[in-house]
Amino acid sequence: MADPGMSVTPYWELTFDADGDVDGPERDRLVAQVTARGVRDLIVFAHGWNNDRSGATALYRSFFAPVPALAPRARLGYVGVIWPSMRFSDEPIPDFPRSVATTEAQAAPGPALDKDTRRALLAAFPGRASVIDQLARMLDERPAGTGALREFGRLAGLLVEDGRRQGATDTDEDGEPAVFTGDPATACAAFADALAAAGPPGEGFSLPNPWDGAKELLRQATYYSMKRRAGTVGQRGLGPVIGQLAHAAPGVRVHLAGHSFGGRLVSFALLGLPDGVGTVKSVTLLQGAFSHYAFAERLPQAPDRAGALRDRQRRIDGPLVCCYSHFDTALGTFYPLASWLAGDDRSCLGHEIAAVLGPQWGAMGHDGVQAVPGTARLDLAAALAGGLPARGCANVDAAAVVRRGGPPSGAHSDILHPELARVVLAAGRIT
View 1 (cartoon, rainbow, N blue to C red):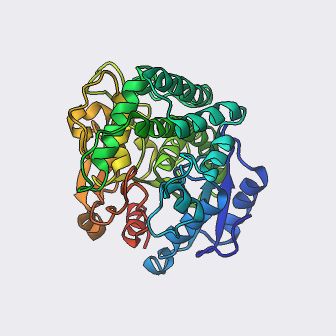
View 2 (view 1 turned 90 degrees about the vertical axis):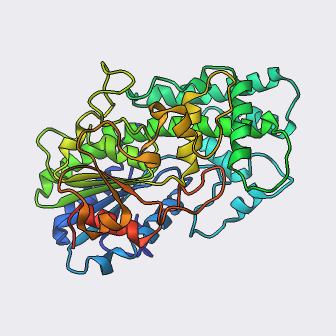
């Protein structure tokens, strides 16, 4: 059931499991009610990493709140997608109240994995309780020697295997990131250096401990699994539901929006759309956490290969708008580092590591859609002044508002701004 305290109405939620199966009564309620409620434009929003329904609903409540005043004449409906993702509790979301768990997670001394993060890991990886217990114990004890770090990497890799078994494959990225196939001790040391480079300046000099990077290795293992899961939920779950909605209510215009892995979810929904469905009128990606080559017909580094969503933007009867920010440390530093890591040359670490490593490893939310001819590039002011194209891809530099947040994720979750709600409306030509 939707939260009765939602900021907008009519509002529905669609819940999917890890395999993309939708909650039937929720789907049926949406399909039955959307026309009866007089909805003309339906905004469907998918969260990124998140630990529970209440957190997702709170995100939707805040993001949707300014929309009615921004489009007073529109006949709007709203859908919040709920899917089983997770985040570490030490990643505060700007403009959200600091929870007790977040405060505990950032306090010292204390366990490396706070109780809420451990609970979220157990929910995300059922059947891996003993592995998660071992990982937590090693993070607390920090045993000496590279052998212990390699064992930690092996255990984290078991979680990656779980994600690989159930997720969609990215043909725009070279299979499993090298961080999970190379030397875990090297990876932990590189992550420790990256964390030190991304942290607040002026705290004195000390050599990073590789165990400082071990938690980041675990974080990337969960991100990798959630990223694959997002594709599965989009393709097997949301895409077919949009098809059912189009059949029942063909006059309703659908506008997809997603944050982080939610951007990947709504993008992969285009892959799952039934043939002939043309009701998707816009897609807006907010700090999308997947390859910026996803829509490319040819990969620059491998011209015989294509992106996982090659030409799928053509399934949109309107624009694909990608908002990005260089203040997003999660995508500007740790995403490319996790995708690339091999060897021990770490001289390039820093906030702009994506630029140093090369474009092969970039993410949508760091520099926008790449290798798609005709993609427009605008700043936020130009986009809001009517500069968005009617069709095709558009990259919008949102750094003017997406700029707050500390390490390790930076501004990745700083999306609760009316300007970004206006981008969603502008993409859909909703007034």
